Structures are given as structure tokens and as C-alpha cells.
Image 1 (cartoon, one colour):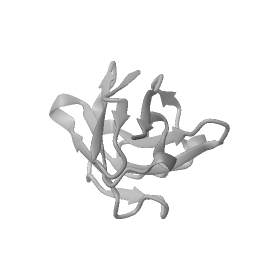
Image 2 (cartoon, rainbow, N blue to C red):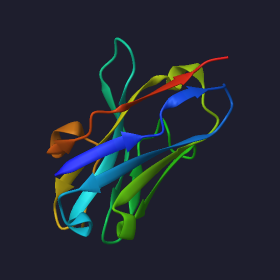
Image 3 (cartoon, rainbow, N blue to C red):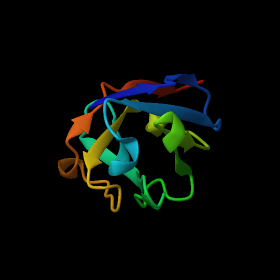
Image 4 (spheres, rainbow, N blue to C red):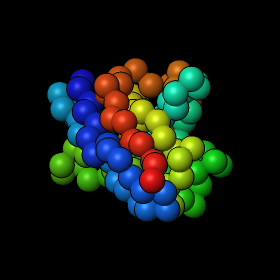
Length: 125
């Protein structure tokens, strides 16, 4: 199982930005995917998740309404759309996967077995 995040970079405050998480080496719709981030000097924070079979999403209260997770099973890719970014959103962003037939998901880090290496988003003017 391999996951690769992409799309990180420098973003202006208030702008939107999207990240991608491409999966390889597993049957994508048998897994659920979550997004996490780790800001400098802080612990890993769960952002949300998506079930690959039903495409049900769950979000952490801190990002509910501002971040959106979507999935393209045909491309084995999960997306994280982030809106109205602020400097406090600066972090390394990770996607993670768990093989659970894609029927449930959580944004607890301990529930996930496979992780990408992350992509850095810096929100600054």
C-alpha cells in the first residue's frame, strides 16, 4: 500500500487550495482514507475522512464547513479542498488509509495503518 500526497505550497491567507492523495498497490474501494495535519511544534490533528464505498465523509469540528474531502475511485485519488486558509493552517498534511472494506472511517490517527510522507502547506502573505 502506497500513498502519495501532492499539491502543497505557499498560499495567500484567505485563498483556497486543494491537495491530492494518490493510492497505489491496493484495491482502493476496500479502504477508507483520512486526512491529517501536523503544524510545527504541535501534535497530529485529524481533519476528516471518507469511506470509499459509500463516499460518506466526516469532519473534525475545527474544519467542518471549510474543508471538503472527495474521492475518485477510478483514479484511486482522494482530494482535500481547503477554503479560506489562514496562517494557522500552515502544516504538513498527510493522508492515511485503513483496509476496512471502505464501510466506515474516522479521523483518529490510531485507526490508520498506511500513511503518506506528507506535503507542506504554508499560508502566508
